[in-house]
Image 1: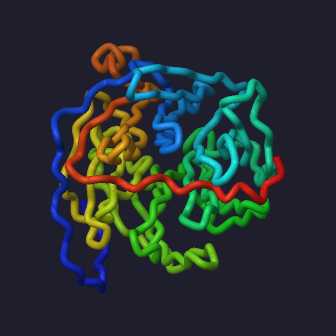
Image 2: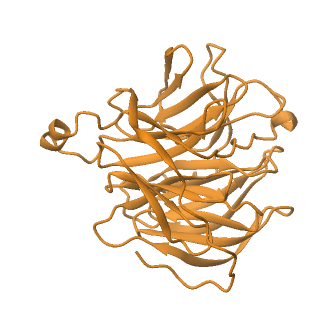
Length: 316
């Protein structure tokens, strides 16, 4: 693995402590597990099967499971600040969905009517409550995907373009850097991030994955600033120094296509990890019976709670 040089020279971070082996929590056989989101107010985990068009909820205290089926892909989500329910990205854009109500998601904005071969993929909120979501080519080939910022007043801004598959984003602790994955290219980009303005600039390759070592998929940041990246085709989640990109450790999974990760639990020391069956042959699935499952592993240091969408301004 190689990365570009950096002029910043803070002391490198040490490796986190991994407490035990990953545990399979839900053998869901998800086609494309993604979208891990810990809800502090519900003390439960939400996650998604994108291609299965399904949202899952897992309660670690009781083990209770629930799911919702949709008519199209649901791809990412965040809780709303000061309002019930979730903001989600569906196939064509940003929508509201309340799991407590028996009504389908309601679209707020669809920014890509001119790109019918695209769908939305990963996304997260920044600390100011703006939702950053990326689009991708359905076939994972054409560089038609883009990076969008969706604000609580329903303004939508395109900030970058030209990706086949997008994943992330994640931010540095000082909020001066935003990381964003170009999965097909096998690289993680870094941008200078202006938290007040909600803008990105100075795009550069921050980390490039070696051939045959997986591709960068979903990711999250922990409370020390370390970046945790799920590796599609890499059988693992890897943890990295936020400046140098140096790999600090790996968590191996019994599934090759590892798709996303997020910290949760009452102490925020549980790393939840999703996997996928998509792209596997019948023989590979036979060899990987837990592909598409939800996993967890205990870490000796906490992660960060997910930022909420500043949804009080959005009319319900």
